Every structure is written in structure tokens, then in C-alpha cells.
Length: 430
Image 1 (cartoon, rainbow, N blue to C red):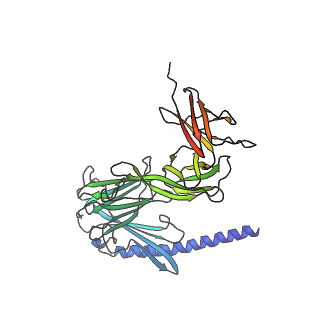
Image 2 (cartoon, one colour):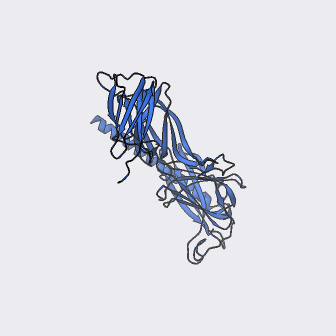
Image 3 (cartoon, rainbow, N blue to C red):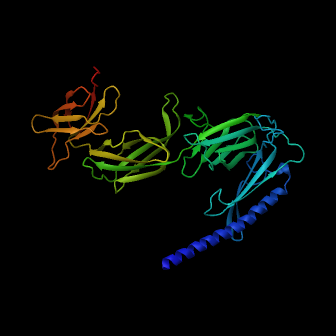
């Protein structure tokens, strides 16, 4: 009963505090909008924005003892009224700057953008609309399936204009940002896009200014035209890595490198992928690590443990990590100094692993064992038995058989950890 009363009391205090914040935020929002209403039309704009003006895009204000964040956004709007149409539409509006839209949002600690107090208004010029020049720029933020991402943060900068452009805004319900009156420029609009739970993407300068050929280059604006730029961001994903020994016991503290993720470009000359994730990690005392909030894509793992080797896993490398997926990977680690043999069986035509293959290893003296390959097409000798089976260094015979494949017979000199790949030829169709 005491806990219930305390919980209800705490919730009530939080609700009261939020109400006080909202009241003060509403007062401040109205004050800011009233200041803008008293400005001349041509002066309404933000520092670093389009249209340009003296209003700060972001500022921190203390009011009634409360810390508040004020975001002011101003843009041009092309009214789709049939009397003059829209730019590129029917009819075509040659002056797509009918009026200015202003949005003032006030947030406070614990309240994110889009959830504070918002006031919007539009301002119409005295007399006829005027052509402010420049081009129209549309940014589309999409996921991998082509669906628009609403509420994504978009920062658009151009350090070559006067005044400098630095626009901070959010995508609309369709995943778009539409800006009119943008000064022309050739691949000099740097764009950063982000959203909680999604990848963050930043455009790059083109090659050869950039050392590789980027996937997402800076945007261009051509005067008098509609310029479109699309950026794809997907939900982040997780990889849970477990390190195990050959007896399926935890192998704590395995150091490894995880690399891959989003392809941000191609290496000049070779065309090899350049990715954005490369980290050295460890499975720690528990023998596992959950790598969270990483970009989807293909990943490789390289073991960094002197004296040991990564002899296999329960999943094929590279790991194909999908958006919003939680993938589990079991790494199998063996001593590099112990006399042992790993046999990997693959299809000679496709290079794919052959599971279910029977692998016999013997020396005709004191060792004879047969194992069946798993999903990775691998087996490890000596097998895990009680009492332990001993495999000593020396020459061994190897025989591999599998359904629908020709048999293999060969030999191998085993010394410490030895790896052998056997390529089986498929049986020809009759």
C-alpha cells in the first residue's frame, strides 16, 4: 500500500511539473510569434536559413525559473491554388514563393522535438509576390523499401553562400523537406539526416576530393529548377556474439574485430565497398557481448586472440544483418598449438558448404574417427569424447563421402592446428 501511494504521488508531481512547463512554454511561444508578427515581411527569416534573417533557429531561454529550448523555422510556401498553380505543376507557377510559413516550437528537458508547444503562422507579402531567385530543393528521406521517414532530423549546410546556410528542420509526414529560394550551387550542400532508432547519414564531397567514391554526395541546386535528393536510412540492428570452445563451453574474453555495416562508397580503382563500422570488441568474462544499435549490412568477424584460431561459427560469413534485426552468432575457437585437424567440405562448382558429409580420418595405428559436417560444412578432429581422444602429429588418411557427390580420398600431414579444404564434385545427372 505504501509503495502504491508513493508511486501515485510521484506520478502526480511529474504531471504537475509537466503542466507548469507547458503553461510557461505556451506563453513563450506566443511571445516569440508576436515579435515575428511585428517584423517587416522581408525581414522574416532565420540565421543560416532560407529565407535568411535575424531570427535564431535554436536558442535557450530561461523563463519563470524554467529552462526552455526555442526552435524557429521559416520557409517559403508555394500555394497550390489553381489561380497560379505550383512550380512544375499545371498551371506552372514561375514564382514559387507565395508566402512565408513560420513555426515556433518550445520544448523543455524530457520533451523532444515534435512534442512541445507549437505555434504556426503564415505571412503574406504586401502587394504581389516577388521572385526571390534560386532554385527549389526537395529532400526525400526513405527507408530501404522506399517508404518515407517522417520526423527525421535534417541539417542542410552550405559554407560557400553569403550569408552561410545552416538549416535545421524535420521531414514531413511523407519523409520530405521542401525548400524554395535556395542559392544555386554545385555539390556544395552538405546534408546530415538522423532519427532515433535509425542510421545517421552524412553526405560527402565527390571523388577525388574525397579519397573514395561516396554513395551519398553533397547536393546541387540549379536556379529556376526543382532539385531532388534522396537519402536512405534504415532501422538499426543488433548482433549478439558468443565465444565457445570446441566442447561448446564458454570461451571468455575473446578479442575480435567486427567490420561492415552501411556501404558509404566504393574504393577508387578496385570498386571494393567502403563501410562505416569497424570496431575491436571482446566477449568479456561471460563469453558474450551484445553489440547494439549498429547499421544493417554485411559484417565479418576476425579473431584477435594470439595462440587461438576461429575455426567456425553457426552462421555463414559475411553476416547479413537486416534492419531492425537481432542476430545471434556463436564463434567456435580452438587452440592453434594443439595437434588437431579442421576439414571444410565445399561444392567444387558453387563453393558452398556441404552439410551432412561423412568425414573419416585415420592413421592405421591408433586413430580412426568419423564425423558428419554441419551447416558450415566443417568437422574438428579429435572428436569430443570421454575419455578424451588423442590425435598426435603425423600423416593421416582422409575419406569424404556425401550424397550426390563423388567420393574423396587423400591424406594430410597434421602438425598443431591444421586446416584442410575438400572440394567435392557433384555427381553428373544421368
